[in-house]
Picture 1 (tube, rainbow, N blue to C red):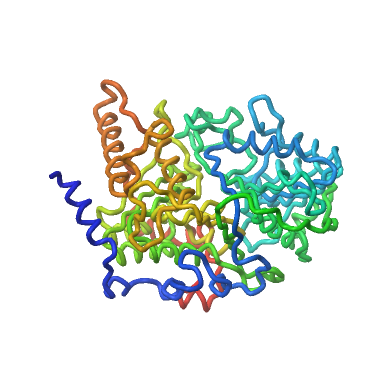
Picture 2 (cartoon, rainbow, N blue to C red):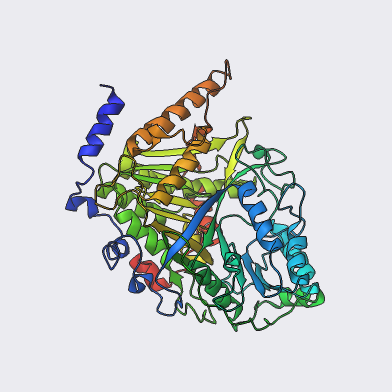
Length: 566
């Protein structure tokens, strides 16, 4: 018996064992979230926002994962092309370039939205106004898209109703029918949410050649950066929930910005300052599938307060804490940052609680910026976080990055988590303090009622059973990263076997590079993530304030920060 097989067998035997001592360093706020009305999803009280204005969750939904921009953007183009009179297109985004193609032959984003508006669909959008372009942001592009849609009869607002140094980071689109519930066009109700903006560099595919419409980026990724991301397509009652998130933001009476130096150029560009009324929503769509979906959000406390989150909302953080408290075998993560100490403590607590738990994380090899401060802040955050996770899990923690089949590094922009093939989350929120407390975020937690009958039928051993959506999402992502065809995943079903397979593939590819690329390149795209130094004590002392204030700010009230709660 090999050492790896022996370790796997040991993990299987201890998967349900967790001593009280393992909880001693778990954050107090995370401990209070276990249990409740549903073992995986937040109850109404656990959301922590009595003004949320959303169902606790919605059942009977069809959920499809669209992996990488070339899977999502053409589908979005079809949805927009079908929007006519009696339909509404509602969207929110962090970044949008009006000339970004949705497919190889177009249309550009602006043309698709303008087309819907000229066909008399109700087109409404909220784009983050963004910080100065001197800092690398896209105010002008967002403004130009708003001007084009507004001229066609729609209305797009530049929204800066955020905390200082904060952003509107939600990325979603809703196309819905504004009609009676017996209208025949029920297929028009669809929503998309996740990590993909309608912006340059996003239209990349599974082989990762990159998007020829590239954004300025770190030179390490080449002239057309390879970009990995995930968006969800939702059908069923949850579409109305996503629409409600938009309507709440749209009706917020606060000024779009409090800063006069932003108001003046917006007025000169002819941008509206107030939102037009929206038509009343239609009744929820009929059930369309087997998935229960819970929308999770981050809103910080703000003055004036958000009417739908007067004390803020941190349900993304709370949902992760609850799901990880139930983790026993495998937490699979893809994330852009992985660099927050507060988030690391939640993962570390899960590893201490469950001796058989393994964590597999996929992150970018390099930051998206090249400035010395950017790189040092990124390394400081990620190193401090991963030291805590490694101290808790040791060799049960596996950190990788990606390269394309052509050997180019792939920028991982996805925000995905799958726990024990049961609970899955996809959205705009990264695993950092900024996304959990400070910016506005939207993530969907998916719990498929349909169980996957393949062995192991109950990986966590708690009676939950593997769920079809969560397992399929994990396998789809792993197959892409291992260069495998659809269905070639029998050795990836068991969590321990999956970890062994991807670790082995990464070791082979690392060895091939170490040997100078001699011989055929091994299959797979996973590389072991290098451990880089964030500098000596003095350098860390100098960079830490920049990291805490600018890169990963804390949006919680001071009393909550001191208590370590969410």
